[in-house]
Image (tube, rainbow, N blue to C red; front, side, top):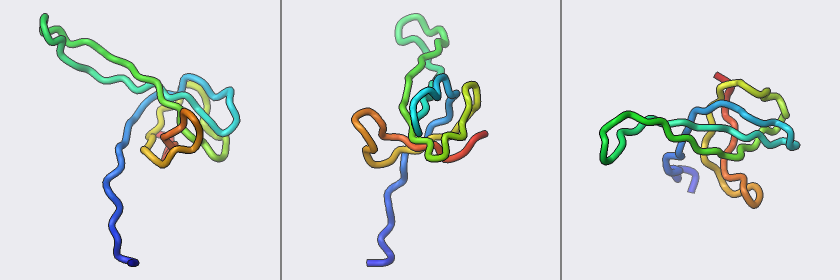
Length: 83
């Protein structure tokens, strides 16, 4: 089964807000959406815990994260690259 194709994984781009944990960073992903009633464009934010194998990412850096298998209780994302 060498030609099995893996499904497309979700990707997000966000800013690192914490790197105090070992091999883990907290990434804040923001998205713009239209308010359902008033129509104003508002920003919504979500935090993700992402695996950073080399502990190389610093606070304030913009990173691309990709969905992966569960690594711990809260970690389901992995840092792919620093933008």
